[in-house]
Length: 165
Length: 391
Image 1: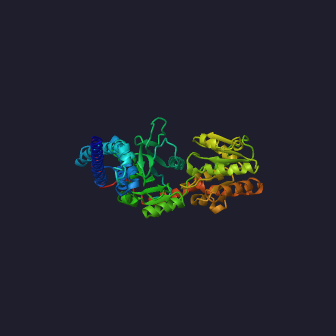
Image 2 (image 1 turned 120 degrees about the vertical axis):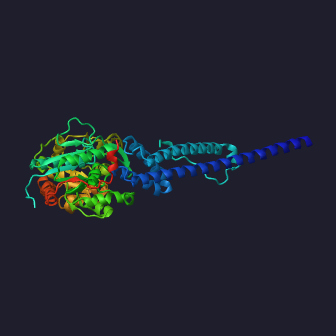
């Protein structure tokens, strides 16, 4: 009898430990998503700032200037709900401008823009990975039944993260 | 003062691809032909997809590029190659004046406006909703727009856009049409004498075909005799699916038609209906329908109100109200006297849009800005000259 109680106690303890372990893991993942989004956000803002600087710099032709100004400005002032579209538009614009050689690759500022785009690509990869892992964990029955995620919002992916930048 | 009738060398700039369909390009072509007919010399600079079959008076600035702009995709020209060609064209052209179309669009006309100095004329075609980025692009546009000696808007609507966005005013000169070509075209019997016409890219929602179809369904239910002729490029399958069988058998989707065929259709229908729901700056098709002698029923958009003189030269219905439209169609279709009256007034109104009138108005502007005899030249301080030096 006491042996059975003992086993039950052990099982309970293991379960409690496992729940707390999973909760901690999930918390860490949520934290990672927050950090990676912070990095991504900063990388996007750097890109817009550089685009605006180039547009105002007299280093490109006025039509290119105007396209850059319009797209970067919209990305900077966009509300959260419009942000994804605006950033996607800026990505596409930069790609077309580079293809047309409208952005001269010699100047210091253009090198900065290129490394900003490289950093942005890495930031996107890291963020997407964090989001996928968190989403996968949150789908597990144990997480849903015991509400281990608490009130943390479910992280989502934005379409603009999936395209080439 | 230069003599009033001296022959001018005119440079025109198109922001959009010359060999792509579009109202702006069509306008430039007609205007260029009109000017040459009057004995002036014209050179047009435009982005071109395919250099073959290019008239001798059109110069290519390179291929147009599709680019996201203001929430849509625009096919424009920019970059160092285009910029260099614009300058070369200005330098070698020895022009008496430059006519820049849509200089507020990031394309060739803006480049030319930055690069040139001297007698510059700008025409604004589009009436756009306020651009999200207008404050940001102001520093680029304002100095360019300031250089234009004369600004032309193609309609009051386009002028309103200009005053609101760029805080500058413009002379209104409508788009031109060749009235005689529409007034004397052939007539076809194939659609009977109770045909309702619609011309345009019907699968664009703002062209309003859905509203016209809704009205036609009502007419079918009421047993009104008619047939519907829809001409223009687009995918008709989704519309055909949504139609009742009885309407489907009275409807002809003709697809894209030639200019001659379009004139024939406009000459042969009993009614022309323009149910557009918005986004129209001018409505050249209304002027063409009037010239062809088709009684016109149109939605009461500001641009259409102007062309139809608030309902004198055609019948207006409340925008997007298919029930009212159905009532009006039935009434006008059954009233032969009213139709011939509309025909008569419409033809007279269409004269205002004939190239002989419109071209003369544009020439008044040309004469004013070129009166000093000053030539067009490259700006003395090219702000963007570093681009030119780099390979």
